[in-house]
Image (cartoon, rainbow, N blue to C red; front, side, top):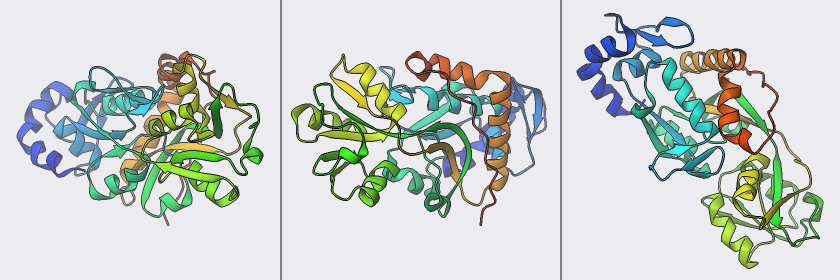
Amino acid sequence: MPNTLKLAAAAIAAGLALSACSSDTPDESSSDGGGMMEFPEGSTMAQLAEAGTITIGTKFDQPLFGLKAPSGNPEGFDVEIGKIIAEELGIPADEIKWIETVSANREPFIEAGDVDMVIATYTINDKRKDLISFAGPYYLAGQALMTLSTTNDIAGPDDLSGKKVCSVEGSTPAQNIADNYPDAELSLFAAYTDCLEPLRNGQVDVVTTDNVILAGYVAESDGEFKVVGEPFTEEPYGIGVTREDTEFRNWVNDVLEEIFADGRWLAAWKATAGTVLPDPAVPTVDRYEVG
């Protein structure tokens, strides 16, 4: 966890115990889903509950999942999942510190302790598991393609030969294009929004990332963009935490399974991405062993 939490915990633990826990024991916090919850002493859960704040990395440029609102805070499905997890720790939404986390800095932020977790359309894969650990998945997406609405010669990834394809550094969609469609001309930026103007002015022919992210851009484009073809990969979204903190990861998995069952997950979806996209199937949490 960030060093600031460790410094703050001792100073505010007593006050938080009264307001967030209704108990004098520092390793307990309340949960709307099940009353009193007890956290093992010294665990990440106990430290966060005692501090009364949590730092979450998310995207600020992805409609429906993580988009910075006029208030300065992000909104979307990923954000709502973060709020639910914080609530399970007794932490209110206004005590969450949101850190903009682009694809390329997700693992570095977790490894450095700059964030307590990352919820940022974050695909679980084996390469990333070597560096950090994942709870989830909490959503199953798939890579897709977005073009101008007037484009008619791209219907799927097999049409990318000789085309200029825009994606983001450090993303699995970009790596997939580089590995499997080498005849495409790949342009990489820091954020997917950086691809939108090049698509408009013809500098690139297509933007690729997960279908749900592209759906958000299409919904905001007033008919300017379209998603073509069907998803051609599987992208299970997970919640990134430090690789060694199995206890925290298992607890987050417990929370996910609880909200899958009690309706909070679907309610978060319907209030955000579900305003544009159909209701998804409930994922199955993968409680893999860290090697």
